[in-house]
Image (tube, rainbow over all chains, first blue to last red; front, side, top):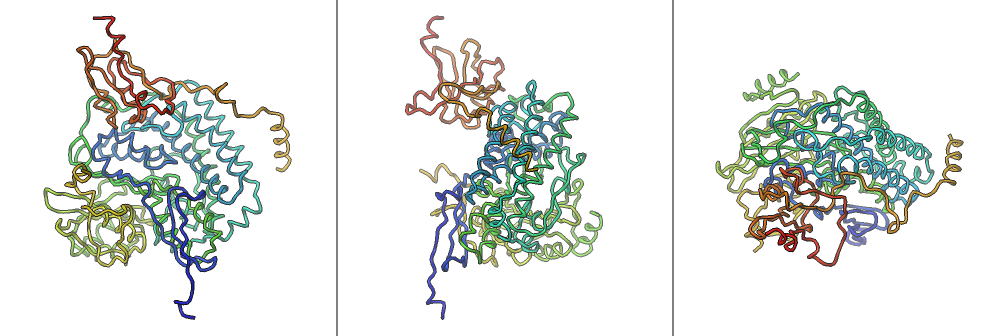
Length: 369
Length: 148
Length: 121
């Protein structure tokens, strides 16, 4: 039978589909098996890299939390660290502790969204409701510290943080950590349908993962023990005590287990930092006056950090003015959605597409910028 | 650890890698020897192409490309910079060294800056649909005039 | 471990639900929430710093009865609070009132009320 006789169908798994988000994939099918897949990005392209060239660093801090929808505080921290390294200053100690607490809480709530969306894709409604219900307690903590539930509008800015902690927020954080431990108790109960649909599906081997550019939990689920917080430490991470979870199989079930173990490690970090929170000022004095714009010295800097999805990086170049000359953003989902997804979908059944898609923990806004 | 790599690069290519601080090094090289240097660095252990950035310098009439390489064994970042001409810019592709992660980044730069990469299997459009104007991230792109 | 779950289930059966009946009762909003603006025109010194720092250019200085006041367009505002932080006399504040969706675009512009000004010529 020659190739011309076979019937191929093209199927568009598009952005208005209830399981897909702002991203679409064109599938070439033969019966129920996928022959080839092509990703179509670009629904959320806003041109961040050009927008940041027209604003001062403080205004860019407000803009930087819309790079990724699910974890704005992590991107705030990347941008603030980039500007501080270029100006060769450090934030005060109290500000560093507050920043690490918020970054780890943001990682936990992003993993809750991951778990909820993966359950929703399988039709496991209980998991979806548990995840999004418990996430609300973390958003209440954000509201009392930063002023809004999801977008903190540049709370972590170059020089420190914008406001001090209100009264009684430390007890509130400890109560929230107890609720998070309660949530993990529910997740330890393994649903047999969930296991059967995720074990052995979407296997990513280690050599392929390195060539395709995977980072973060996707790379750790394939067997490589690496984490930017340990290899290239920033803020307070070189003095903290935590583990890096690693799994060997590389399938969707291994990625799900890594998400749960990372939540446990983040809770450990928050407890350590809360115990030694010092008093002091919250913003570097030379950058505290908003009315006087400061010049960025000439130079370039490349800052890498560990967001919940993988390796997030910013390359900042300045030629001596008050606005940056070039600000390039490296999003982790750019590599997970374009080469890795096309490689994983080849040869799979069409019923497995939502599982593989949501197990990669991606954010379309991160990819398009 | 950084000194060993600096010596190896100097003995083979004659260019000096400047150490900015712990785990960060910067290096400048001309366009002709760039591919040989990148292949050499890949063998030395720099397995990840963490980022590929392009910059536009209209006053010097040149464009600049920066390759950020990360090594998991040595735990070090080395950034390689090179200048290319601004009129019909082009440079050889590195897909043969780093695979699909390099191919997708070159596709994005081709669309937004107009740099050509011979050797890249697929340079079709990525983000902008039905767009037929000049590359939008260049410094002399007047976006207000384009939409009138 | 299964016993812990069953005890928790029985305890949950007798608790009241977490949801509230929204228009009749509401949950408390945190202090420091960034909502709609409130401008005190007596304190304003017309420096124009709020218009300079707004990242979306939502504030414009307009002249009313010989003095310049800010006019805020809420459809462009992202409620970041930079205008509140930079005001040197603390005349512009963000309250706890949440901006609601409305079919009338003119209600989204906050500007100085001319009738209140005429009392002090």
